[in-house]
Structures are given as C-alpha cells and as structure tokens.
Image (cartoon, rainbow, N blue to C red):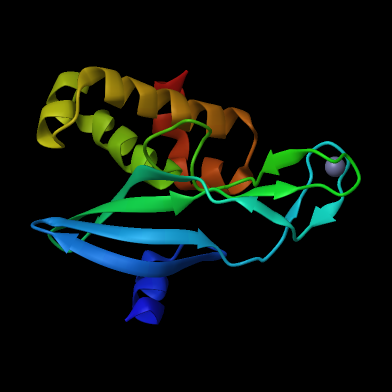
Length: 160
Ligand SMILES: [Zn+2]
C-alpha cells in the first residue's frame, strides 16, 4: 500500500511512510528518500539525524479525496560546522502550507476566473489564493525552465 501511494503521489525522491483516512481527507506521512542531506553553509553531507520536524501541507487531490501531507522536514547535524540545519524540500516553499504543484493548479484556474471565485470553489480564502499566486511567481522567477514550460505564456503574464 505504501509503495502504491508513493507511486500515486509521484513527488520525486519522496516516499509515503504511512497513511490515514479521515472522512474525505487522506493524510499521507511523507519524507525524503535520502538518508542524508547537504549542509547549506559548507556543503558537507550529513547523515546524522538531529530531529524530525513534522508539519501539514495541502497537496493535489487523489480521486475525490483531499490530500494533506504530513511532511517530515528533518534536521541534520553538520560535523564540520557543528550546527544543525533543515533539509531542503523542493516540492514546498519555506513556511508554506501547500505544495508548489497545488499552487500551480489553483493559479491555472485564475485564467478563466478570479481570486474570489477560485477561492470559493476550492474552499480557500482569498489570502490563500494570493499566497499561492506569489508562490508560483517565486518559482517562475527562480528561472526553473520546467516550471516555465508547464505554466505557459498566459499564466506567466498573469503572474507579473
Ligand atoms: Zn556545515
């Protein structure tokens, strides 16, 4: 089951450790596959796990189920710097409550609608939709070509 869910989730280098269903919500506990992370300060690879830090992030739905990821953003200890650091996660922005791909999906809906309608249709607040717009803009700004291709011209001009 975990392997199937990992495949269905389809986030690169991410594995589903356990799952829980509550009504219409599927909660997936996930973490990165790698047993190590690279220190941002010095580039040293560390395998010394310091702490597990979990938080909830909204992801794309599966079927008729809302999906919430219980993300483990692990802290490692760097031998060289003697400091702890959090690993990088490429599917969710820092302190964001939704994945990049969830934000992209919401922003795409803005093409043929407006913030208030999209917010209402997805059970979100206007602020949340605006925050997702910012998230997508930041991703595009970081010149990730795959993102640019995925988004298409209309959405890029919309984001500006
Ligand atoms: Zn270091």
